[in-house]
Image (tube, rainbow, N blue to C red; front, side):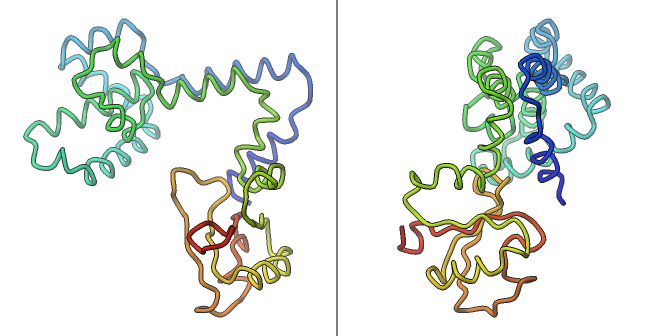
Length: 236
């Protein structure tokens, strides 16, 4: 069982008690924002690039895992952004992206999408970051019920009448027969991880061009995936 599956199973067992959910919400928000810098630190850093670089180094030492993931995403984003190719101040932009992760909670791709470069502290704070979004989600939703939307398979099973297309939620090898029935109707389908997002780990599968076996061709044999027929196959 993968980490996401274990978390999904654990959260589905939350007791239906208001006091427990309130405590859990407070914990989740505190955990989500644990790495964020104070307003005083942000204000000083936005006025002095040396202070900004020092704070980034401090965050690197204090939050190595978060820093490492952000750095990896930063490299991926900048490699694909033509507007940053060949710029002499690329290191400055690079550090500013890392700074925005620990100051405001922005992911590297958000830095580009929201055009955060050269924006002031007030302008940056006026934009809802990925971290802000999670905090609002925890505050405004039932933390137990919202798990339905963290698993695309559960979301489909609950709201399938609104999807306008066929899909199959595969949990493990026991769903192999259902998978075989599904591909009889839809030999070409889109497969995606039920816990994935932002278009990652999405595959177009043509069963006419491959042999069917549980281990190689069943999405979900080793992990949970949702094969579904999208508009790319011409079927609804």
